[in-house]
Length: 92
Image 1 (cartoon, rainbow, N blue to C red):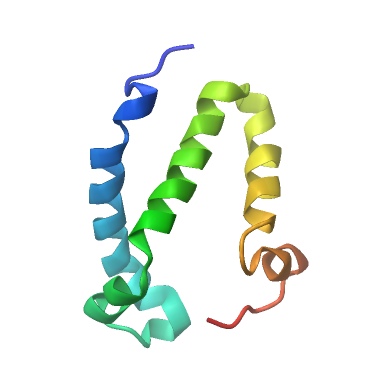
Image 2: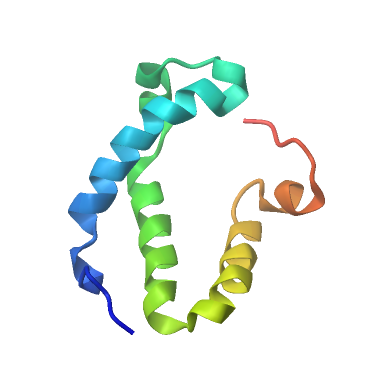
C-alpha cells in the first residue's frame, strides 16, 4: 500500500476540509435552516477533528476491503447513529 499523507500530518488538511464542508452542509442541514455562519458556530470542531482522525487512522490499521464495515460500526456508535442505522430521522 502507498499513502500520500503521513498519518500524523492530517490536521491542516482536515481543518481546511471542515471549513469548506460547513458551507455546503448549511444547505443540507435541516433543509438549509442555518447559514454557514450559524452552522459554523454550532459545529464542535475539536470533536469533529477527533472523529475524523479516528476514521483516517482506520485506513492505516485495516485492509481496504474491511473499511466499509468498520466505518459503519463506528458511525452507528455516534450520537444519532442508531437512528441512521434504522433509517429514522434524527433530531438536532
